[in-house]
Image (tube, rainbow, N blue to C red; front, side, top):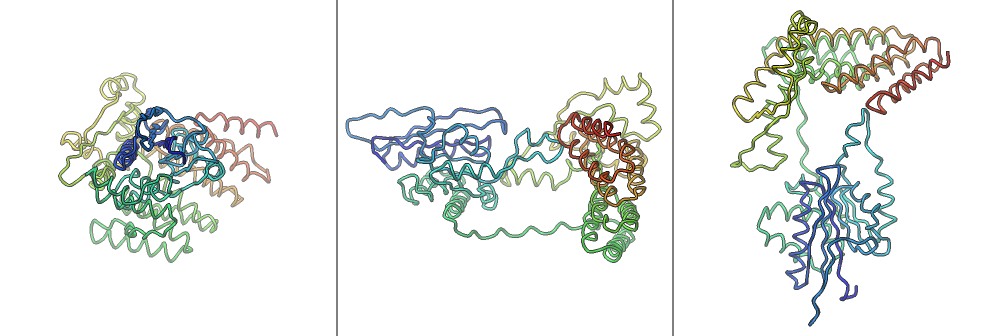
Length: 495
């Protein structure tokens, strides 16, 4: 590399990934070796819809000459591109920042899903294969590894791992100890950062990493009375003796979920429902166990309040932000209860009365239907949600539970009425459309009902199972259901 030409380094990172820290380390590294260095940044849109580009240029000093360094990366003139996430590497390639004759591309291969991927009703995750292909073909050298996993295993942040990968790549003419000295001189989180640096260095060199300690398997809640524990043992024994091993495993997960969600009696009801399907079509036991459990553990206001007030959640939040023992963490929840959700949390008769009376609905709208922020780390906010979570004991008497149970039973009746196990299987799988809460639940519920309503159009067709699958895929393709409506219209045109 010519001493008259600076080394250009572009870093693309999202908020919270430490792109600014990494940029600062590179500048400090160069200056510590007597080089000229300059770092700039151009912020992107907030969070995952756009990343900040940090740009560093560094050059060896020449006597009597003062360098003029650029403020922005120029396509075709970048020596190193560092991407803190795989699709950000793809964006850098699209911008022309990666050149096959010049650029060393360093990227974490993990994914942080974009908003477009997250809002898709089904699996909207973009295919990573084209990005890997472009990274290998369009760069001079591609260094890729799951840097986020290394950061989590070492209790650090991804910027330190990327710094280690940069050192291992040889893209900068500085020894490893100079990189490590830069971290030490920063004086913040030194041990964790050095551990992460070492992990990134080893990953870039293709060296094996020690596997993280396995997490303990999640157990089934066994609190309550001796009688409840005995019933749970009997239920687990039934799952393992009456069902094939794969179905028994799925049932065990479902039992754990429903005991946690409600109680042992609810789990017993669940196993009985699965058994009815399995006795008719044994091949459907696994899918029945999967989707019936999801249908019975629906998301309601009580469940949301329960999850937000658990000690495990506060511990998880502290762990995610790496809060130290002496640090105070304040958690604020954004909530917007709708009138429909408030009515659904009332006893069935009262809820229907409020729903059908315009005056009572108006009172609820005025009193409750507005956005609010609830601090669950404050006594008032925690107490309010804790009391709502305590309504779990009365859930079976509430309007929402009655409706969910009726809808579940109608669905299973239709499944059992099918003469074809293939059609019954696709109807079981279609229940995945109903998920979430509020508007998300309403949209999914409506799509599911449309598929159930279209079954009459498929009577006598040999490809009925395939069409149910197509309808489900169409329902998952967009949020507003236009593709599902188009698929149903296509079926009608055949008649």
